[in-house]
Length: 260
Image 1: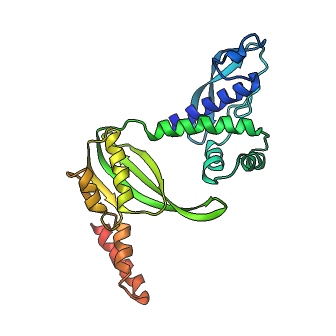
Image 2: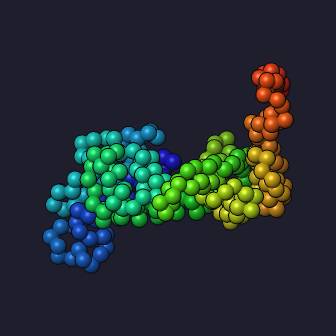
């Protein structure tokens, strides 16, 4: 996430420079306009994910005033809120423009927002398709249901999420995929995507008790051992217990898992 944030900041700044000069980088429209790009300079900024070292573009006239990271400031706008505004709400460009004013107190034209969304989309695609390691010790897989607005209606959509534990003992988000409802058939596509991006083996997969999920995993990673999530096991078990006895049962189950 730290690397992704730094890259997005730099692309947002490039899009601001495009608007400031009136043409894109390397475009012939910039010939003999009187102003042009003049390299970049490094700057260290503070964000929710710690310090970033990024490069700020500059123009020959020295008139470029960044909005995303203003001059003489070390803290940029929240990329999380920006991405949520642009992607999750599924709004029009004019709605996004209003959202930017409401959250950040800044005014960006609809053309500026279009340039920004295009650049962020490209970063997201590159991150989603990046190569992965050949082996992961554990991969947690689950679907999270969100309510989103689509064509004027609020509907449920599932975000399929994979988090892997690599050989260095670090967790990383392997990817996120959006579908209508959680199903083993959609998970087959997710697992195939992981394999196409370089994953050869997963030692342990941790999942819920979705019907057909274990067989789906075996089809793509036949040597992987599947472990059902303890929380999901307890939830499924409690469905067969009357309400007045659940509290005592859960208390005893907690002792069992703690002793284990």
